[in-house]
Image (cartoon, rainbow, N blue to C red; front, side):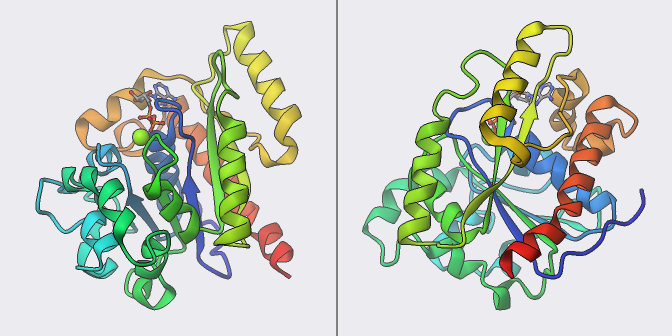
Length: 273
Ligand code: ADP
Ligand code: MG
């Protein structure tokens, strides 16, 4: 694919929605892959103890592997925990292991418990990886792991599944984002909404898409991710759909979403002034 413009500053996204199964992980890995295929350097931080993003990116994440858990504890640096995805030399992942399952509770008693990921991903510490984009994949909850992700990022990407109750829980997510913004991270904002698992054969999918666009306006990407069996098969091979079946509709829709995201970098920079 053609090269996308590098953003003037590293863009850090948290991919959040406390509902499970809406396409957070699928979006994190495939959007990351789409940006990397198009010439950018991308780091995925897996912050879900399930480690699904790590699996899809084909990186090692058995218990004891240096991971986001040790990163939060301050036991390893980002450079020590990062692995290159075997399918793309510009795609990197800090994996999640099962050790992260206890972190939600362990973090409670720690100093600066909300800001630990931000510290670990500071500019200096990411210098070696030199990523243009960082995408943080969150667990399906609004606990301390997600709060750490929201403090470490400037932009939030909300994937919304084109299904019944699509907007259920989104109000709660937005209130949490506002709380983090007013107390911990003034620059945080929802920059991107992505419609996922769209099934063009159903009237419902169109209704949901319309409702989401009415609610979020231009924040919603024009690119919509179709429901596609290739997208769901790819992780089983330790691949993103971009590697598994680059010509598929799923792959092309994530390529489009990546292009749109990169094109928006300019307007983000204007906003920053
Ligand atoms: P989350 O991280 O929000 O829990 P996932 O990304 O794991 O959600 O997606 C939930 C399930 O839906 C997974 O089995 C995934 O493979 C499947 N899925 C996600 N996006 C698509 C899609 N566009 N087409 C088909 N299946 C999808
Ligand atoms: Mg997930």
